[in-house]
Length: 266
Image (tube, rainbow, N blue to C red; front, side):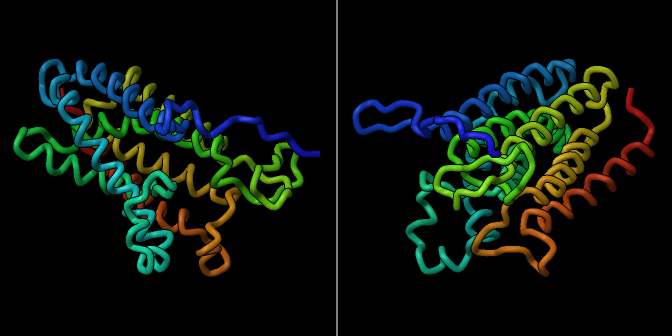
């Protein structure tokens, strides 16, 4: 027994030669909803930077950082040999291939470049961005599911699903696992910390929670996700995704411990 994959066309709609895919709409939805929520979170700083105006201004920086970083991260982390011999494909983003870890590095670079001239504390802006990042993760993973890509390993569990274009064996819908854990659950935890415990008053704490929460979630779900064909399991045990999340977990824990030892700001 296996679940049937829902018949969802990856193309949302087309206007003449212009084709709009759900994958692109997912990115747009993630940015727009994240932008609106982060504008609301900025009000908690009561006029101190980053203000709503700063968040509004930073949106374009975030988009550029995520797209460039995500693409370069995929090229360098997951398939460097292929792109070395096919350099023109590096810029063909519409064919797919984005790395979350590369996107994080690109976003962090954008934050670094933006805060200097604005005299904004880097951890303040980072906390706001990390608070809404799970929203984008949710939409991105749902788009992966619609595209029938990045599916899971073969399974005999009742959750097994046969994906179009695969080998016809039931596999874990790991994209949905990630959307739930890295998206919904992580977002809920962060929002509770902000609303109930005023976590934004501790610079860097939400950033630390995100690093640890995403890292731990991704490490766990990689046990159900099919390893990248061109890489496989490294040392017959760890996937590339798990290796890249290990530093996030340790950095997140170290940051949380350090911040909680400091006196809380008024």
